[in-house]
Image 1 (cartoon, rainbow, N blue to C red):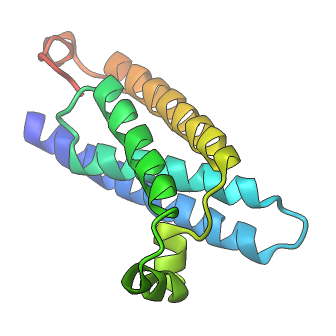
Image 2: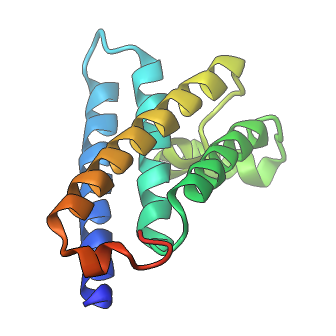
Length: 142
């Protein structure tokens, strides 16, 4: 039973990731949408990606890991060796690694992680209320 819950959780997070990617790319194409909206969605995607990959790890730890990952990517933008600049010049590299360090991005990443945590927490709370009480008592769920 537990493995099917984990599989369903991974599928749910994967679907959320696809939705967030779509929203992020769309936000860059629509004129008038502030660029920080995409930065916030990037952090949301990172959070859900980590939740999908590490579904057994405590939600608070994932929140910290996701925030540290986003911060690391932003600080990596201060590194300008030719090989990483070449990666950033590609579309995928630009989306994944960004271009140009901004202190404000750290705030938007933090906002995105908080939003994702809140959404995830609400989802978990709702899921736990739907499950039989014997499953609710499983250690470290979700």
